[in-house]
Image (tube, helix red, strand yellow):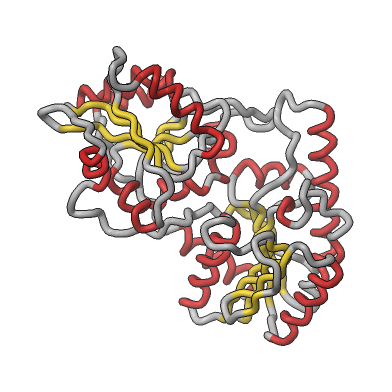
Length: 383
């Protein structure tokens, strides 16, 4: 198979979907296929960059020029299959792709096509305002137009929620679970998080040291860490360690929320929790970080859990994660727990009882790694 994976941008470490496609391209190459990235609307470059692994076309070029260059590249590389790693907002600022759908679909002419949906139909959640509902409806119309213009495409979504929404709109497809963009490394001989806490001058209990919990990435609105503090403190006491709450990655605009929690629960307060923000790290350090935690903490709303790359990275590493946000609901989704990836724990009485009994939970890995499962799906869909 000579496969092009079509994305918006492909700047390593700055385009999550581009990183996802790059890992999948590497997996397909490992299986003996030819695979490359076609970035149609890359915001990080000023001039086209054409290499063996990727063609990146700058978003500042007119759409007609971008799509003509893409069509020529597909022909020159004798591409016989295309996979759209699709986030509509990467192809049009508001995700309204009705006008560009014919150009997008033209890239698949004469080729097998599949679509893996990473974002779908804003405004379907309960309580959405009229403007947001209309915006979401316009998104859905554009996506349906794009799908109709393709020749019998194989469709999939990265999570249960989007798959159900697509089915509602007559776009039935598979679920191809999301994998993280942090390759799994062996567990470090020395606990990486304990070393960072020691460097920061934070001391733990005399018995175990710390009970290590941690976030990865920015914090979503609606994250309720205070509601989890009693549960986490009880688990730490059972484990014999001082509770530590860590963060890795870019907090961005959510840094103020982090500082509020630190002031409310950190050293010098009645809770006396060790807080440590580690900032951006390379993927090797992030793997060591995840491998060193006792329990992951996730700020993504439960309904959207399947679209979170950070939560997928926890799942890839077998780390159990406590969900601290259930702020988004849909009328057609009776129980948001159905949206959780393997190993994720709802913030409820059952999870509290589990962690009170067994605060150090055994790692729970997927039966088939998600990257391998995605490669299997691509071969079934396009082989």
